[in-house]
Length: 208
Ligand code: SF4
Image (cartoon, rainbow, N blue to C red; front, top):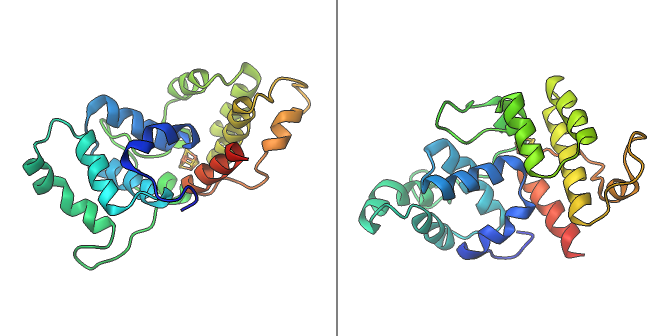
């Protein structure tokens, strides 16, 4: 994992590097103190991919599900977590889901928080998300156009460029003629194809 071994208590601080799909799952987990199965799989495997060990994953989820007693947690959730780390059942060592898989498979129902926001959020909800991340009007329209043309991963890539440029204090100049100077510097060039790719690129970018 790019960031080395992650401790359960580091996850909140690493949220700045997460794509919207994972940030949304994280926020809803903190709000509801619970995540349904689809979300636990999507977010749990992502966290595994960024370097959360099985031991730390058990601490992370048990701490997060604060309404569960240790007994309830062990009975209801620990098996599945160990399973996703290949320690139970067929011992398959599951890998984090790609964007394509999140976009195409297992659409979220009401009360679910997994999925891809660019694909599964309503347009007003998507706009609210962009506004909450200080994406300006120009970039918002650009991203919403990509979303309505079903270019979800391209929209996510634009979101990456715009928000990372802002985090580096590089955004602003030259709107209307494509990317601004700052955005060009962080333009990933590559399409975002995996939530862990988004995370790793962002983590390395901010570290340097
Ligand atoms: Fe997550 Fe991929 Fe959707 Fe981006 S395009 S929000 S990384 S699923």
